[in-house]
Image 1: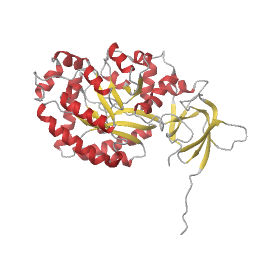
Image 2 (image 1 turned 90 degrees about the horizontal axis):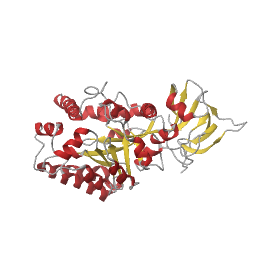
Image 3 (image 1 turned 60 degrees about the vertical axis):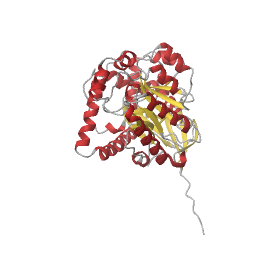
Image 4 (image 1 turned 180 degrees about the vertical axis):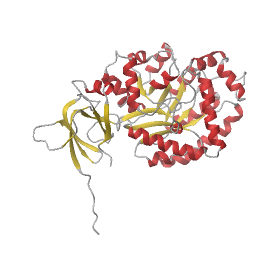
Length: 413
């Protein structure tokens, strides 16, 4: 019997600039690829006969979206209105879910929305993303997409009588979907301190620690949350009381308590962290396996106070970037998030901002060895960004401030 092995075609591409991210930019660069795998990266020489990309084009690694909720990718515009309080906005989220449940399309519409969000993300140049996935958990859309994703199984339950059933639901599902892979490219998401009984939160974290799984938690997202956790009063108490989820005698999960547990995981994501205090940032900085995910346009949509990004970076904290969902954002364009960072923090270099949307995001998800940078031997997703104007001497700045004519993948048919 003769076995024919088809080797991937080796092809050279030449561009005005190549931005490896982990190495300095290369002017008039050449990248050699065997299928999706990078074989060589260098400055082009006279006589090179590779495919010359259009003028004003640069080659970059695929972007990394470290936080989103793809179940809302069907929405044409964000829920509520700009500046709405967090508890009031969550009411809008619950109404949207109830509307889909009433017409009997909750599960199927969620599947379609996730697939739509994955397709949109890929069109925007995202190679890797982390998605908060709600029960009943279905990983089929992620597995069918060429985009690499890390579904994070979300669980919440505030009342004591919910703990046992939610534990069983999560543990049995984890065993079913991870099988012998032991959680590979699947993580866990205890939702938020205002939506979890401490015992349920500890159970989820214990599973994450046992399984060496990535964990993501919404934390210090709003002033309303801080008020509720510190005093037991405010809009969140009213909201949870309406839903029959609040027991005044119940101990609440404080921010410090959550941070202590998150620091024990192999790798953890603090989602938003809009109102973390200096001492809490100091704590986080002492754990390199902890990262914070900043969602710039969602932060702007809710009208939060200035984001403490500079304070985080000054402490050496890994800060990744996320789009959040279309329930608080007009689209899933990670580059648009980076451009808002550039607009709000002009003191940051374009290179640093671009790192947050690539290599820092990949490292936050525990996949920095595969994604976020152009490296020989790896398949990070090789993206072409073609601008309408010259790239000048700082291609990272041109990417963040110039007009994009087109974006497309070199490693996908």
